Length: 177
Image (cartoon, rainbow, N blue to C red; front, side, top):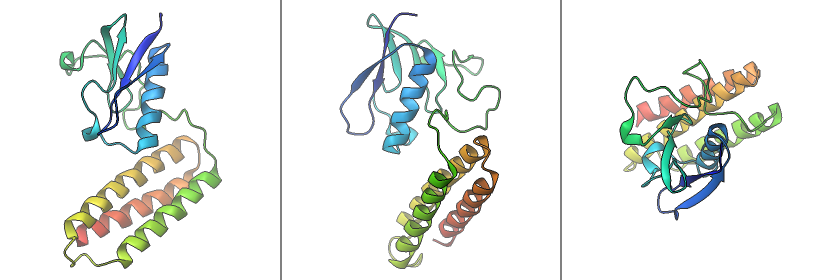
């Protein structure tokens, strides 16, 4: 496969084109950039994820890291990915090309707990920023659930259980708001 370019364009960040050698490489680069910036799907701009070869669109990477043939507008429910980082498991987290250990997960867990307590100490769900608290808590719950799936795939089941519990705590915060 000849060299291709992957377009990355999130929020107000400038458009970047990154050379990739394969579908797997495109997925890895896209997901790494997405995770590094903590971007949501709604923050994809313009041709974010589009893969070109000789200035022609050949494929694109969807938010979940799957690579699809053609342009995003050509996707149908019968489309088959060119590359699927999850393989046959549709519930798996984005590609886990980043190797992590138990200490990293524990540090992230401590950090998430501290963030939650700091945020909640600043006010209550009854205050004027209930919507902001709800949005933040929902985002954190989703992030913890994704980390739980990653921990499970890394065989760190005890850590995974902690993240699942923390995800539920964030959800209860959102429900109170």
